[in-house]
Length: 235
Image 1: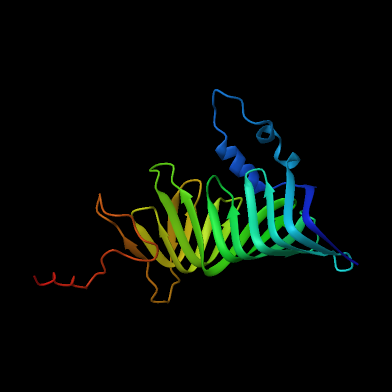
Image 2: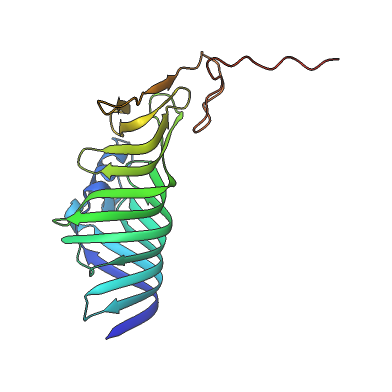
């Protein structure tokens, strides 16, 4: 038996390590008291599911949503469609499709065509985002510039606080840029590691801009080695 409803709003108890990390990093000592919701233990924060429509199949224990937004604390996942094996966040996999956006670590976000979010023991263990390309961005605390990256696949590991970019991976700190087959960016420490597979001709490519140069454009370098700039136009 299936049940449909408009603007479904379901409050579920559960724990999101991603939301807990985001709340902990976002709250700093201040003269004013923090909001009560941010001082609650993470396991007491409800998970809220809002959708334009929902369908629950009790025979197969599956749920489907359209225009869905799932949030807990500072974490937010939204997409055109979502489906999962039941509303159990203890051990489940949610698949999001169409204009997927994941807001996780403070001010960081992922955008993709599709994403699979895995819950383990009432915690978000990881989110795997795919797109052409999937995109990541986060403002840097040290410089105020925007760190941006894109790849065919981005895996966000909640416990480690890292995003792993593979296949056509590119990352910029707002000025310089790096590209290669595999890039791992630590969201909390704000540093990147690049790797290649042994036995292949793959290389890591780094472009360092002089001070005062314009910010890097995603996936493009300002000057390509070996190319002579075109001559100035004739008067």
